[in-house]
Image (cartoon, rainbow, N blue to C red):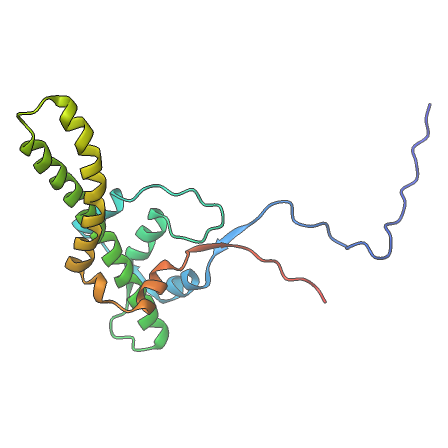
Length: 181
């Protein structure tokens, strides 16, 4: 029978711990701040709920954007209105900007559907092939018109770039481990 080989000591320049095999997803700094300042739950409004329903699912590769679950989590937090600290202002501004983004999604789908319905009605006497050619393009164009209309109706077109930046911060990030000196 073969004898087992003796274990060799690792070379002196080898790292002591092996590198992580998988990435770990952790809450981002802004999410931790929101959880720290949260004083309860906030009920979502009708237009916020339907706007979240109209958002497409997201495949996270780098966790650089917020998905609809992250937006729902931010919108369902209640913050103290009387807290005048800079951190409280940041999380309230972020929540309001996300609310505007979510509500404006309703306008996008509503405008696209309305434009498609009006186009369908205007070509009702034509054969179905003529309608089938035009309607997808009108619906797609209606989403762009609806985004602009939604931004105007919710006041999103008048908000500062700082507010939009706060709304675009991701809720989760990959953990970047610290290296020992």
